[in-house]
Length: 242
Length: 166
Image (cartoon, rainbow over all chains, first blue to last red; front, top):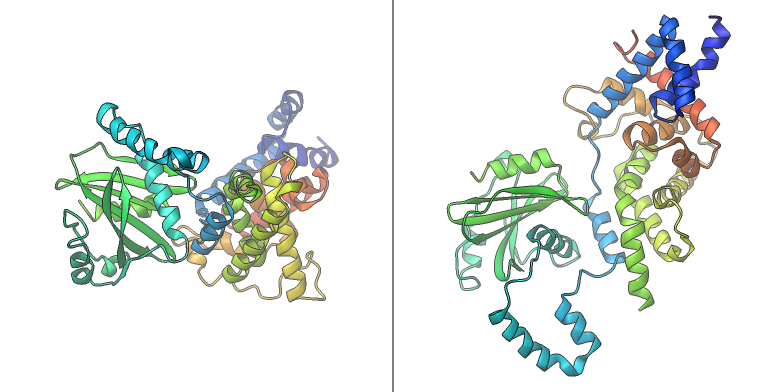
């Protein structure tokens, strides 16, 4: 192989590495790599570089301020079906309310995905002025604040010493009931931890609209943590509660 | 209801690509506050011009807007500079540790030291895993130029980091 022909191959080797070649060209590259140790070494170096880059750079998440901007510019949070219906047919509001009462008795609960609900609540809360009802880093202030507002007392802990400072609390409505939400910080990220009494349910985790969530049960309470924080750190936060 | 219509399109077209757009702005500008401002402005701009989105590649559309805004900001901050030059201040990002796995900053420094034109191609390909076609659309250059810039960027990174060469 002449030097020129190897240099001609470089961009093809790279394109092959990047998955941009058709089968015929990929076969051409493969044939060349078999006979040319120098180009084979180049191909191996490309693979090592990619592996290292992808391992080393943890994707940055969108800062809170930009999340809030996106939420503001996007459509308002999903309107519950009955409210949308009321908007369309205001005259039927009373009848609809009555029907809803009957439906509540007669029909099984509609299948609302808690993950969607929890993430939507988190995004709504990120909008200016919605995040925190009681601002305090003192669990002895936050916990009593829920007294009289809920029919249970949520466990409140501060993990400021290990990088998850308590920021405050707020009331929300989730899983068909009023719930306590504890707000924690992690660097520039916000974690919403929603807690309510309930039977132990299988732990869940996932990502919706770019937000990670984790749920678990402990001591008769159900916990849902939602944040733009990466999964690993959200997992560390969850582990503190077990 | 045109407002909420635009909002819905924004949520579908723009929102999913804002994290990648922010990361691109961050790599180009290498300053969090400036990158946030740029993406903020670009998001507003995308919202105002959402009607001009014709259902082509949403990712490329959003990143092109953010990229153009970032380049404009770079040019303003250094009126005499071309994007082709390296940035004058080569200090790594203040919170570079957030970018890197623990203890590994050689690669970060090498990536940050690349000329912005090479850095943007490399970041879009390696970290955002975009196709040559998408990168060409975002940066506004031919696919062939994307390929040669990627090659140069990779060779420079390999030269500057240990243990990558065979």
